[in-house]
Image 1 (cartoon, rainbow, N blue to C red):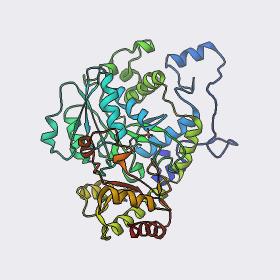
Image 2: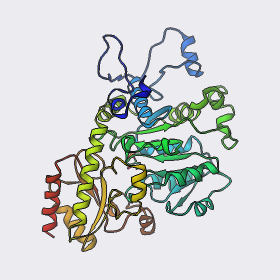
Image 3: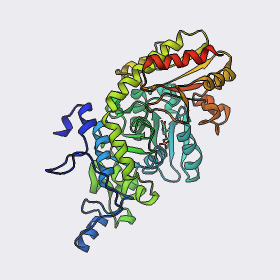
Length: 425
Ligand SMILES: *Cc1c(COP(=O)(O)O)cnc(C)c1O
Protein backbone atom coordinates (compact mmCIF):
# COMPACT_ATOMS: atom_id res chain seq x y z
CA UNK A 1 0.00 0.00 0.00
CA UNK A 2 2.73 2.44 1.01
CA UNK A 3 4.46 2.02 -2.36
CA UNK A 4 1.58 3.72 -4.15
CA UNK A 5 1.74 6.87 -2.06
CA UNK A 6 2.53 10.16 -3.76
CA UNK A 7 5.74 11.79 -2.60
CA UNK A 8 4.05 14.34 -0.26
CA UNK A 9 2.29 11.48 1.56
CA UNK A 10 5.43 9.36 1.81
CA UNK A 11 7.34 12.38 3.20
CA UNK A 12 4.82 12.75 6.03
CA UNK A 13 3.84 9.16 6.79
CA UNK A 14 6.42 6.87 5.18
CA UNK A 15 8.72 4.60 7.13
CA UNK A 16 6.78 4.42 10.38
CA UNK A 17 3.37 2.82 10.86
CA UNK A 18 2.37 2.62 14.53
CA UNK A 19 0.16 -0.21 15.74
CA UNK A 20 -2.81 0.10 18.07
CA UNK A 21 -2.06 2.47 21.01
CA UNK A 22 1.56 2.99 19.93
CA UNK A 23 3.02 6.53 19.69
CA UNK A 24 1.72 8.47 16.68
CA UNK A 25 5.10 10.16 16.21
CA UNK A 26 8.26 8.16 15.49
CA UNK A 27 9.87 7.52 18.91
CA UNK A 28 13.55 8.04 19.63
CA UNK A 29 14.93 4.62 20.52
CA UNK A 30 17.90 5.92 22.44
CA UNK A 31 19.31 2.46 23.12
CA UNK A 32 22.59 0.97 22.01
CA UNK A 33 21.38 -2.55 22.45
CA UNK A 34 18.45 -4.97 22.22
CA UNK A 35 17.26 -7.78 24.46
CA UNK A 36 16.80 -11.38 23.32
CA UNK A 37 15.40 -14.46 25.06
CA UNK A 38 17.81 -17.10 23.79
CA UNK A 39 21.39 -17.45 22.60
CA UNK A 40 20.10 -19.16 19.51
CA UNK A 41 18.19 -16.06 18.40
CA UNK A 42 21.26 -13.86 18.83
CA UNK A 43 23.40 -16.38 16.95
CA UNK A 44 20.97 -16.24 14.05
CA UNK A 45 21.24 -12.45 13.97
CA UNK A 46 25.01 -12.66 13.83
CA UNK A 47 24.83 -15.17 11.01
CA UNK A 48 22.42 -12.85 9.17
CA UNK A 49 19.88 -15.65 9.11
CA UNK A 50 17.25 -13.62 10.99
CA UNK A 51 16.33 -9.95 10.71
CA UNK A 52 16.50 -7.79 13.82
CA UNK A 53 18.56 -5.20 15.61
CA UNK A 54 21.63 -6.30 17.48
CA UNK A 55 23.62 -3.16 18.10
CA UNK A 56 22.98 0.50 17.21
CA UNK A 57 26.23 0.85 15.27
CA UNK A 58 24.63 -1.46 12.68
CA UNK A 59 20.92 -0.64 12.98
CA UNK A 60 18.37 1.03 15.24
CA UNK A 61 14.54 1.29 14.98
CA UNK A 62 14.45 5.13 14.77
CA UNK A 63 17.22 5.18 12.18
CA UNK A 64 15.54 2.34 10.30
CA UNK A 65 12.29 4.32 9.98
CA UNK A 66 14.22 7.20 8.42
CA UNK A 67 15.99 4.77 6.07
CA UNK A 68 12.68 3.30 4.96
CA UNK A 69 11.24 6.75 4.31
CA UNK A 70 14.24 7.83 2.25
CA UNK A 71 14.15 4.58 0.25
CA UNK A 72 10.47 5.21 -0.43
CA UNK A 73 11.06 8.82 -1.49
CA UNK A 74 13.93 7.92 -3.84
CA UNK A 75 12.22 4.82 -5.22
CA UNK A 76 14.88 2.43 -3.93
CA UNK A 77 14.59 -1.02 -2.38
CA UNK A 78 16.60 -0.13 0.70
CA UNK A 79 18.66 2.58 2.35
CA UNK A 80 21.34 2.98 4.98
CA UNK A 81 21.91 6.06 7.13
CA UNK A 82 25.40 7.26 8.00
CA UNK A 83 26.88 9.77 10.43
CA UNK A 84 27.52 12.31 7.64
CA UNK A 85 27.34 12.84 3.90
CA UNK A 86 31.08 12.22 3.71
CA UNK A 87 30.62 8.81 5.36
CA UNK A 88 27.84 8.03 2.86
CA UNK A 89 30.15 8.80 -0.07
CA UNK A 90 32.99 6.79 1.41
CA UNK A 91 30.89 3.72 2.18
CA UNK A 92 29.04 3.95 -1.15
CA UNK A 93 32.38 3.67 -2.94
CA UNK A 94 34.12 1.22 -0.60
CA UNK A 95 31.25 -1.25 -0.84
CA UNK A 96 32.27 -1.87 -4.46
CA UNK A 97 35.88 -0.68 -4.73
CA UNK A 98 38.94 -2.23 -3.18
CA UNK A 99 42.67 -1.51 -3.52
CA UNK A 100 43.63 -1.59 -7.19
CA UNK A 101 40.21 -0.47 -8.41
CA UNK A 102 39.38 2.69 -10.31
CA UNK A 103 36.47 5.13 -10.17
CA UNK A 104 35.42 7.80 -12.65
CA UNK A 105 34.04 10.98 -11.04
CA UNK A 106 32.76 14.34 -12.24
CA UNK A 107 35.27 17.12 -11.57
CA UNK A 108 32.40 19.35 -10.44
CA UNK A 109 31.82 17.53 -7.16
CA UNK A 110 31.39 19.18 -3.77
CA UNK A 111 34.86 20.06 -2.39
CA UNK A 112 34.61 17.57 0.49
CA UNK A 113 33.76 14.69 -1.86
CA UNK A 114 36.55 15.75 -4.19
CA UNK A 115 39.21 15.64 -1.48
CA UNK A 116 37.83 12.38 -0.02
CA UNK A 117 38.06 10.69 -3.43
CA UNK A 118 41.31 12.32 -4.45
CA UNK A 119 43.32 12.02 -1.25
CA UNK A 120 41.87 9.62 1.28
CA UNK A 121 40.60 6.90 -1.05
CA UNK A 122 43.93 7.05 -2.83
CA UNK A 123 45.56 6.00 0.44
CA UNK A 124 43.35 2.89 0.33
CA UNK A 125 44.62 2.17 -3.18
CA UNK A 126 41.47 3.35 -4.97
CA UNK A 127 42.37 5.46 -7.97
CA UNK A 128 39.93 8.18 -9.09
CA UNK A 129 39.95 10.04 -12.40
CA UNK A 130 38.06 13.35 -12.43
CA UNK A 131 36.43 14.25 -15.72
CA UNK A 132 34.64 17.32 -17.03
CA UNK A 133 30.97 16.19 -17.07
CA UNK A 134 30.31 18.32 -20.16
CA UNK A 135 32.58 16.10 -22.31
CA UNK A 136 30.83 14.01 -24.97
CA UNK A 137 29.99 10.37 -24.31
CA UNK A 138 32.74 9.31 -26.72
CA UNK A 139 35.31 11.44 -24.90
CA UNK A 140 34.14 10.24 -21.49
CA UNK A 141 34.46 6.60 -22.57
CA UNK A 142 38.18 7.04 -23.16
CA UNK A 143 38.65 7.45 -19.39
CA UNK A 144 37.11 4.07 -18.54
CA UNK A 145 39.72 1.46 -17.59
CA UNK A 146 39.45 -2.33 -17.24
CA UNK A 147 39.49 -1.88 -13.43
CA UNK A 148 36.85 0.89 -13.38
CA UNK A 149 34.15 -0.12 -10.88
CA UNK A 150 31.79 2.84 -10.93
CA UNK A 151 30.89 6.34 -12.13
CA UNK A 152 30.15 9.05 -9.56
CA UNK A 153 28.46 12.44 -10.11
CA UNK A 154 26.06 14.93 -8.52
CA UNK A 155 22.58 15.75 -9.84
CA UNK A 156 23.39 19.42 -9.27
CA UNK A 157 27.11 20.17 -8.95
CA UNK A 158 28.09 22.05 -5.80
CA UNK A 159 28.80 24.92 -6.26
CA UNK A 160 29.06 24.88 -10.09
CA UNK A 161 25.31 24.09 -10.29
CA UNK A 162 25.70 22.13 -13.53
CA UNK A 163 22.86 19.64 -14.05
CA UNK A 164 23.88 16.03 -14.64
CA UNK A 165 23.10 14.60 -18.07
CA UNK A 166 21.66 11.37 -16.67
CA UNK A 167 21.21 9.79 -20.08
CA UNK A 168 24.86 10.32 -20.97
CA UNK A 169 26.20 9.22 -17.59
CA UNK A 170 23.98 6.17 -17.20
CA UNK A 171 24.93 5.06 -20.72
CA UNK A 172 28.60 5.60 -19.86
CA UNK A 173 28.27 3.46 -16.72
CA UNK A 174 26.00 0.75 -18.09
CA UNK A 175 27.84 0.27 -21.40
CA UNK A 176 30.79 -0.62 -19.18
CA UNK A 177 28.65 -2.73 -16.78
CA UNK A 178 29.45 -0.60 -13.73
CA UNK A 179 26.98 1.28 -11.49
CA UNK A 180 26.17 4.98 -11.67
CA UNK A 181 26.34 6.54 -8.19
CA UNK A 182 24.61 9.90 -7.88
CA UNK A 183 24.81 12.39 -5.02
CA UNK A 184 21.29 13.86 -4.92
CA UNK A 185 21.82 16.21 -1.98
CA UNK A 186 20.78 19.50 -3.61
CA UNK A 187 17.58 18.52 -5.45
CA UNK A 188 16.34 16.02 -2.84
CA UNK A 189 13.93 13.32 -4.04
CA UNK A 190 11.17 15.91 -4.20
CA UNK A 191 12.76 17.68 -7.19
CA UNK A 192 14.61 14.77 -8.82
CA UNK A 193 14.72 11.00 -8.36
CA UNK A 194 17.96 9.78 -9.99
CA UNK A 195 16.88 6.11 -9.97
CA UNK A 196 14.13 6.99 -12.45
CA UNK A 197 16.87 8.31 -14.74
CA UNK A 198 19.23 5.35 -14.54
CA UNK A 199 21.19 5.82 -11.32
CA UNK A 200 21.93 2.58 -9.45
CA UNK A 201 22.99 4.04 -6.11
CA UNK A 202 21.96 7.42 -4.65
CA UNK A 203 23.77 9.24 -1.85
CA UNK A 204 22.82 12.22 0.29
CA UNK A 205 24.25 14.62 2.75
CA UNK A 206 21.13 14.67 4.97
CA UNK A 207 22.79 17.63 6.72
CA UNK A 208 21.32 19.84 4.00
CA UNK A 209 17.68 19.85 2.85
CA UNK A 210 16.76 16.47 4.43
CA UNK A 211 17.17 17.98 7.88
CA UNK A 212 16.48 21.38 6.39
CA UNK A 213 16.97 23.33 9.61
CA UNK A 214 20.73 23.09 10.14
CA UNK A 215 20.48 21.03 13.32
CA UNK A 216 22.23 17.73 12.51
CA UNK A 217 24.93 16.15 10.39
CA UNK A 218 24.00 12.92 8.61
CA UNK A 219 24.09 10.97 5.36
CA UNK A 220 22.24 8.30 3.42
CA UNK A 221 22.87 5.65 0.76
CA UNK A 222 19.89 4.39 -1.26
CA UNK A 223 20.03 1.21 -3.35
CA UNK A 224 17.90 0.97 -6.51
CA UNK A 225 18.19 -2.82 -6.36
CA UNK A 226 18.51 -2.78 -10.15
CA UNK A 227 22.21 -3.32 -10.73
CA UNK A 228 23.39 -6.81 -11.67
CA UNK A 229 26.31 -7.37 -9.31
CA UNK A 230 26.83 -10.89 -10.66
CA UNK A 231 28.24 -9.63 -13.98
CA UNK A 232 31.76 -10.78 -13.13
CA UNK A 233 33.21 -7.38 -12.19
CA UNK A 234 32.31 -7.54 -8.49
CA UNK A 235 33.71 -10.77 -7.03
CA UNK A 236 33.12 -9.57 -3.43
CA UNK A 237 29.39 -9.70 -4.19
CA UNK A 238 29.42 -13.27 -5.45
CA UNK A 239 32.05 -15.02 -3.35
CA UNK A 240 31.88 -15.91 0.36
CA UNK A 241 32.52 -13.10 2.88
CA UNK A 242 34.73 -14.74 5.49
CA UNK A 243 33.81 -12.06 8.02
CA UNK A 244 30.27 -13.46 7.92
CA UNK A 245 30.79 -17.23 7.84
CA UNK A 246 30.76 -17.32 4.10
CA UNK A 247 27.69 -15.20 3.35
CA UNK A 248 27.44 -14.60 -0.41
CA UNK A 249 25.68 -11.26 -0.86
CA UNK A 250 24.08 -11.79 -4.27
CA UNK A 251 23.04 -15.36 -3.49
CA UNK A 252 21.67 -14.64 -0.01
CA UNK A 253 20.25 -11.12 -0.36
CA UNK A 254 19.34 -11.01 -4.06
CA UNK A 255 18.54 -7.45 -5.19
CA UNK A 256 19.48 -6.10 -1.73
CA UNK A 257 23.07 -7.40 -2.04
CA UNK A 258 24.70 -3.96 -2.22
CA UNK A 259 22.90 -2.26 0.65
CA UNK A 260 23.30 -5.36 2.86
CA UNK A 261 27.03 -5.46 2.22
CA UNK A 262 27.28 -1.72 2.90
CA UNK A 263 25.71 -2.25 6.32
CA UNK A 264 27.01 -5.54 7.63
CA UNK A 265 30.53 -5.09 6.30
CA UNK A 266 31.37 -1.37 5.96
CA UNK A 267 29.09 0.23 8.56
CA UNK A 268 29.96 -2.55 11.01
CA UNK A 269 33.70 -2.04 10.50
CA UNK A 270 33.92 1.72 9.93
CA UNK A 271 31.31 2.61 12.56
CA UNK A 272 29.99 5.79 10.91
CA UNK A 273 26.43 5.25 12.17
CA UNK A 274 23.72 7.92 12.50
CA UNK A 275 22.52 8.60 16.04
CA UNK A 276 18.84 7.87 16.80
CA UNK A 277 18.33 11.48 17.90
CA UNK A 278 19.64 12.83 14.60
CA UNK A 279 17.44 10.35 12.73
CA UNK A 280 14.44 11.69 14.66
CA UNK A 281 15.28 15.27 13.60
CA UNK A 282 15.94 14.23 9.99
CA UNK A 283 12.59 12.46 9.90
CA UNK A 284 10.86 15.53 11.26
CA UNK A 285 12.58 17.60 8.58
CA UNK A 286 11.43 15.25 5.82
CA UNK A 287 7.80 15.71 6.82
CA UNK A 288 7.88 19.20 5.30
CA UNK A 289 10.37 18.47 2.51
CA UNK A 290 7.93 18.93 -0.42
CA UNK A 291 6.67 22.27 0.91
CA UNK A 292 10.15 23.51 1.67
CA UNK A 293 11.66 22.52 -1.67
CA UNK A 294 8.86 24.20 -3.55
CA UNK A 295 9.42 27.47 -1.69
CA UNK A 296 13.24 27.25 -1.76
CA UNK A 297 13.02 26.85 -5.56
CA UNK A 298 10.56 29.75 -5.98
CA UNK A 299 12.61 32.08 -3.79
CA UNK A 300 15.89 31.15 -5.49
CA UNK A 301 14.48 31.74 -8.96
CA UNK A 302 13.14 35.14 -7.87
CA UNK A 303 16.51 36.12 -6.37
CA UNK A 304 18.38 34.88 -9.46
CA UNK A 305 16.17 36.96 -11.76
CA UNK A 306 16.53 40.02 -9.53
CA UNK A 307 20.34 39.67 -9.44
CA UNK A 308 20.45 39.20 -13.21
CA UNK A 309 18.73 42.57 -13.61
CA UNK A 310 21.03 44.43 -11.18
CA UNK A 311 23.87 46.43 -12.75
CA UNK A 312 26.28 45.88 -9.81
CA UNK A 313 26.24 42.12 -10.46
CA UNK A 314 28.66 40.75 -13.05
CA UNK A 315 27.18 37.26 -13.44
CA UNK A 316 24.54 34.91 -11.98
CA UNK A 317 24.39 31.12 -12.20
CA UNK A 318 21.15 29.30 -11.44
CA UNK A 319 19.93 26.28 -13.44
CA UNK A 320 16.40 27.76 -13.51
CA UNK A 321 17.61 30.78 -15.52
CA UNK A 322 17.42 30.54 -19.30
CA UNK A 323 20.98 31.89 -19.43
CA UNK A 324 22.26 28.77 -17.60
CA UNK A 325 24.39 26.44 -19.79
CA UNK A 326 22.51 23.33 -18.61
CA UNK A 327 19.05 24.96 -18.46
CA UNK A 328 17.69 22.37 -20.95
CA UNK A 329 18.83 19.56 -18.66
CA UNK A 330 17.22 21.38 -15.73
CA UNK A 331 13.90 21.49 -17.59
CA UNK A 332 14.22 17.79 -18.38
CA UNK A 333 15.31 16.45 -14.99
CA UNK A 334 14.09 19.14 -12.53
CA UNK A 335 10.74 20.25 -13.93
CA UNK A 336 9.38 21.30 -10.53
CA UNK A 337 12.22 23.62 -9.54
CA UNK A 338 16.00 23.84 -9.29
CA UNK A 339 16.42 23.93 -5.50
CA UNK A 340 17.58 26.85 -3.39
CA UNK A 341 21.24 27.40 -4.23
CA UNK A 342 22.59 29.94 -6.73
CA UNK A 343 25.92 31.63 -7.27
CA UNK A 344 26.92 35.07 -8.46
CA UNK A 345 29.79 37.53 -8.77
CA UNK A 346 29.82 41.21 -7.91
CA UNK A 347 31.42 43.82 -10.20
CA UNK A 348 34.71 44.69 -8.54
CA UNK A 349 35.58 41.02 -7.97
CA UNK A 350 36.48 39.28 -4.75
CA UNK A 351 36.95 42.49 -2.76
CA UNK A 352 33.52 43.88 -3.68
CA UNK A 353 32.01 40.46 -2.98
CA UNK A 354 33.49 40.37 0.50
CA UNK A 355 32.12 43.85 1.14
CA UNK A 356 28.69 42.71 0.06
CA UNK A 357 28.83 39.74 2.43
CA UNK A 358 29.94 41.97 5.32
CA UNK A 359 27.02 44.35 4.67
CA UNK A 360 24.33 41.67 4.69
CA UNK A 361 22.08 41.56 7.69
CA UNK A 362 19.24 39.04 7.35
CA UNK A 363 21.35 36.79 5.12
CA UNK A 364 24.10 35.34 7.29
CA UNK A 365 27.65 34.29 6.49
CA UNK A 366 27.86 30.62 7.50
CA UNK A 367 29.68 27.48 6.36
CA UNK A 368 26.52 25.71 5.32
CA UNK A 369 23.91 25.53 2.60
CA UNK A 370 20.42 24.26 2.19
CA UNK A 371 18.52 25.13 5.31
CA UNK A 372 15.56 27.34 6.17
CA UNK A 373 17.68 30.46 6.79
CA UNK A 374 19.22 32.38 3.89
CA UNK A 375 22.99 32.29 3.95
CA UNK A 376 26.06 33.08 1.85
CA UNK A 377 29.57 31.75 1.58
CA UNK A 378 32.73 32.53 -0.38
CA UNK A 379 33.92 29.00 -1.37
CA UNK A 380 37.37 29.99 -2.66
CA UNK A 381 38.40 31.15 0.81
CA UNK A 382 36.48 28.48 2.77
CA UNK A 383 35.02 25.13 1.57
CA UNK A 384 37.32 24.85 -1.46
CA UNK A 385 40.33 26.48 0.21
CA UNK A 386 42.37 23.24 0.27
CA UNK A 387 42.05 22.87 -3.51
CA UNK A 388 44.60 24.37 -5.89
CA UNK A 389 43.37 27.26 -8.06
CA UNK A 390 43.28 24.89 -11.05
CA UNK A 391 41.19 22.37 -9.10
CA UNK A 392 38.94 25.18 -7.91
CA UNK A 393 38.24 26.27 -11.49
CA UNK A 394 37.65 22.62 -12.56
CA UNK A 395 35.15 22.17 -9.73
CA UNK A 396 33.32 25.34 -10.76
CA UNK A 397 34.70 27.75 -8.16
CA UNK A 398 35.70 31.11 -9.63
CA UNK A 399 37.68 33.38 -7.27
CA UNK A 400 34.81 35.92 -7.03
CA UNK A 401 32.04 33.33 -6.68
CA UNK A 402 29.52 33.92 -3.88
CA UNK A 403 27.32 30.94 -3.07
CA UNK A 404 23.86 31.97 -1.96
CA UNK A 405 21.55 29.46 -0.26
CA UNK A 406 18.13 31.05 -0.50
CA UNK A 407 15.98 30.34 2.55
CA UNK A 408 12.31 30.30 3.37
CA UNK A 409 11.98 33.91 4.51
CA UNK A 410 9.64 36.25 2.65
CA UNK A 411 11.16 37.00 -0.75
CA UNK A 412 10.73 40.79 -0.27
CA UNK A 413 12.85 40.73 2.89
CA UNK A 414 15.56 38.64 1.20
CA UNK A 415 15.78 41.02 -1.77
CA UNK A 416 15.68 44.10 0.51
CA UNK A 417 18.71 42.79 2.39
CA UNK A 418 20.59 42.19 -0.86
CA UNK A 419 19.63 45.59 -2.29
CA UNK A 420 20.69 47.35 0.89
CA UNK A 421 24.09 45.61 0.97
CA UNK A 422 24.69 46.28 -2.72
CA UNK A 423 23.91 49.98 -2.29
CA UNK A 424 26.79 50.28 0.18
CA UNK A 425 29.37 49.08 -2.33
C1 LIG B 1 27.70 18.84 2.25
C2 LIG B 1 27.77 17.89 1.13
C3 LIG B 1 28.38 16.64 1.28
C4 LIG B 1 29.05 16.21 2.56
O1 LIG B 1 28.10 16.04 3.55
P1 LIG B 1 28.39 16.21 5.13
O2 LIG B 1 27.07 15.86 5.71
O3 LIG B 1 28.81 17.62 5.37
O4 LIG B 1 29.45 15.24 5.48
C5 LIG B 1 28.37 15.77 0.20
N1 LIG B 1 27.81 16.13 -0.97
C6 LIG B 1 27.23 17.34 -1.15
C7 LIG B 1 26.64 17.67 -2.48
C8 LIG B 1 27.18 18.26 -0.12
O5 LIG B 1 26.63 19.45 -0.30
